[in-house]
Image (cartoon, rainbow, N blue to C red):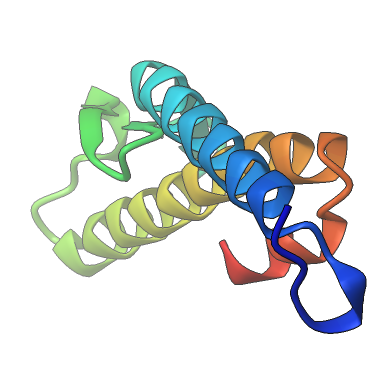
Length: 112
């Protein structure tokens, strides 16, 4: 068996890398199907985002629509979208770090 620096078994390392790659792909595919929901403005605006980082739904309550204050509605939508995308990214990172941590590669989650 070929040994690398420090006496590492390179075949074993390559097998672990392939297994990790396969597991990460599986987790990414599963996370892409999941969604996160965010509400802002006391529930007046809700945003749903997928694990792929795509906005899948925006709901706006009729009560918040005021032609005299469009800026507030725009701010709420922007806030909701940004928070939904942040939560979706966080969800995926948690799932990915679980795979990396389970394989003894906890530090790898910082790279994801």
